[in-house]
Image (cartoon, rainbow, N blue to C red):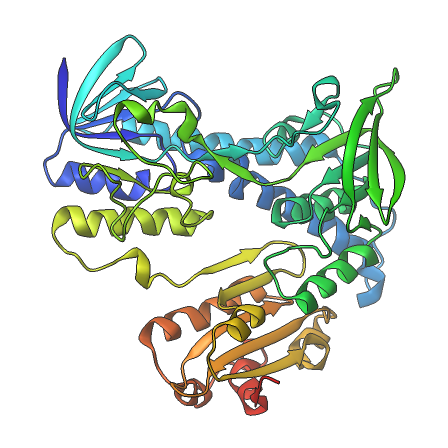
Length: 458
């Protein structure tokens, strides 16, 4: 039996930042990966979807050319080229990561999925290997909804959709959160008819109602049909391959027929594929591996980073998980999970950037909260770019003067939100932020000025 200092299971986004540090520290590393290198982000998430979003925005802006005095003529979509572009980027990124890792000294790559045999041993294919420390970085996958008839229809998830050879004529999407909305807008701009069925009373259930309403207005303005409070009852596929989706809303049964069906109803962790019971690793009621503030499971030498621990569903949180583990493992002890401030973006156009608390979370916190808002249509740079949809919302603790959170739905929101994040880590007063002199003309320059409108939540 081969023994390693570290067994690393899966190659999600923490892999590329931490495995080289382990090697530099003189550790021998076994790396187990039975699928594509790079995890969800590289293969089925960030890289391909944002590439498609970029193609869709190019089509959208080309159609808007006359708004700016630019006459472009008829716009057509080469869908095969759109998909070839995203495939080239994601496959080259995955292949490049694999080649780089395989070329590292003291790293042995096992091209198999790993399962535990005991707390210190792991099966990879026909071999059993032993590790002093084990890191689980095995991610998650799209959740399959238990809908009547689902086994009888050809449904898509975020991974299968990326292999489509032709543009869907009518894409029906079940689910109304981040993955759903990004694909909905992108494929609408590429030419598909889109229908979204969301079971709840608003899109993006984690967001404030005003933000969700604005996002819905933006999407509906581009011709996307959205049904809220739509409870899908059953599915059926016709002889011509079209898919019937039956749903209940307001006590009545409705039907929509599409050429393609996308399930975007959440994610589940891959913990059920690891035989964690053999190692004694505990999971919570949703199957996520329980970790403490340094990514340690209930078994002290086993750690879990990335989507599989349920502490964040983003590439940046996965990378940060790795850094927290590394600080603990290397003795630096600088970072902990408790200190992390939630921040993320949704990449519709215009994008939503979020950090810290939402308004509804701030209201529930028991703090004395100040809030300022500004519609995007009042910001000069947004008007100059003729991209005026959206809203800026900033939340402050009246007692500590520290930022509690911010939401920016609007042009540049995914980038601008990052100016708040380091300031929140520094725990500085918003009054210092207000003194900042920022570049004109930009959307970001208005962020300090918006603070002049802070008022107590009522």
